[in-house]
Amino acid sequence: MTNYLWFSTRGAGIVSLIMFTLVVVLGILTASRWQTRNWPQFVTAGLHRSLALSSLIFLVIHIVTAVVDPFTNLGWSAAFIPFSSTYRPVALGLGSVALYLLAALILTSLIRDRIGLRTWRVIHWAAYAFWPVALIHGIGTGSDSGAVWMRAINGVCISAVAAAAAWRLWEASTRQPLADLVPAPTEDSSHIVNPAGFLGGPRVEAGTLVSVGPAGAARASAGAPRARGGDRLLGGPVAAAGAESYAAHRARLGRMPLHGPALIPAVEAAGLLGRGGAGFPVGRKWRSVAERSNGHAVVVANGAEGKSTSRKDRVLMSLRPHLVLDGALIAANAVGADEVVMYIGTEHRPALDAMTRAIAERHREFTIPVRLVEAPIGFVVGESSAAVHYINTGDARPTMAPPRTFESGVGGRPTVVSNVESLAYTALIARYGPDWYRAAGRGETRGTALVTVSGTTPAQRVVEIEYGTPLGEVLERVGAWTTAGQGVMLGDSFGAWADVHAARDLPLDPAVMKQYGLSFGAGVIAVLPATTCGVIETAEVMAYMAGESAGQCGPCVYGLNALAEATQRLAVGRPNQGDLAGIARWGSQLSGRGACAHPDGAVAFVNSGLQIFADEFALHARGGCSLRVGRAGRPMVAAG
Image 1 (tube, rainbow, N blue to C red):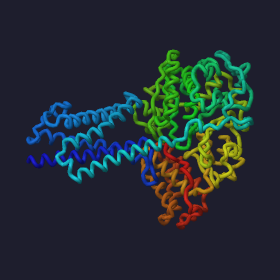
Image 2: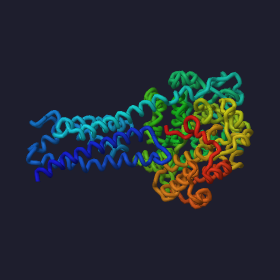
Image 3: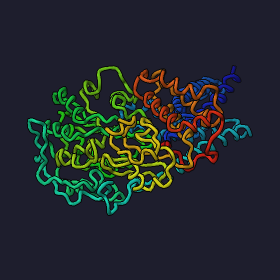
Image 4: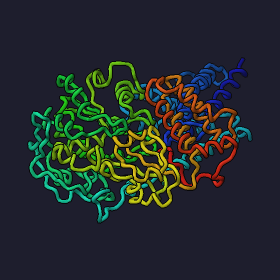
């Protein structure tokens, strides 16, 4: 019996070490959003959690068999009181320390929604120290530590963690600097606006708001800037200067104007559309909450930005945090909210740091609580119901069943969930009025918008354009036209492919784009390089969409995976018979059947690919490809 206990102790300890090593490696990969076509991100995250919990079984076996084994005669105190054992006190004590670190990791994960994501992350990563401590414990106490096979196991475990950590550091060091996302100002900013300030426009202090007459006609405040050129959101210090301080913000724009419910008609008159992707009228959203708030609503400033090709929100928060904060506080004042939640993607470190400093700079001025919640990594976490669900429960999955968030959201209170770009614009409308906002724009939709251009530029670019600016003009401005291929992704993965040459004169106006079956979405313009295959790129996006599913309904779990797998087989030239026809057929069966709009967006995207790259898909169905040289540069849809 003693021998069985001894072997159980050593065997369970070795299995625990191997599983803990995998947990650490998968945790590093999850943090960096690593994925491939065959290994989507949700698989890594799921394995990370499952292995962490499963490893506890072997750890319990390891501890119990070691304590009850009469040969060791350790006692329970040696297992739970560090360094109290008379036998190898240091090595056994490290085992107790590793146990407590692991317990801290698991317990804080269970109460993450109560302690906040930032606190959880600090404890979570610090608790990962349990792995080297456990490794040293095993080497110091194991009777077979000197055996060749045991040295090999230890060596493989050390190498795996070291390689994952080194890769994570390398990946972080190669990320594009924030300042590089915003092009330098140009002399001609009359159409495509760049960081150049408000062209000397006067500042408007609190109390000078637009008035809306009986017929709904808006009259601008006296002295409001009328020029079409010059940045609105990114005006002020150049990007290389970093986040604008509160003092500089106040000196440039004046005090934050608070007009109460009177601001809602002004936002409606401006025609401001939401910038998170859906384009819902901001004023209408505010009014629906104001009618229910009774002074106890909540405003959620949504800066999750989980879309892989969008960078505009993190750039805005990183450079103009006080403008975003102004917008959130002004919204709260307008709808009658008694709390503001800044919901920011945990991977957007510069944005998080800038917003944290901004809140600290002016927290003494707040008349209502303002708290920051870090959104987890993922595509769907920015959906409004998913954001509210995460703030309430720590689970960032959409909840499509009534009541809606404007009826019952954070803490059961009526909640406005507005994109941070939308809120920043309301801070300017509150200062200058709706006529100032509507002075820009070349077509039916008025105003300006931030767009993220990627694909063929040396790096991604975030620029502010007037609605209605032709696509070709934007691409020429950032140097993306000269190498453009046959396709351009408009509106991110929830948008669609378009023929880049046919769409050269397409006005980037949501109303016009809708007529052509396209979407402005979150302002993503991802150009397909001439050396990149449209089928392969479509397969990459579909794999991403399947991997970013919340995994709570059949259409996402099974339907999107089936579409992604079929598209991938076509991309690599090894399709099953009927894959090409099957994609269109399966897509029609998925539409409108998901728990949220995620599968609908993916189906619309793949259908646009089938149309724009029809000849290439037909060639791939026969095992061919017109671009055998493969993909050029980094993928347009990249993790992080």
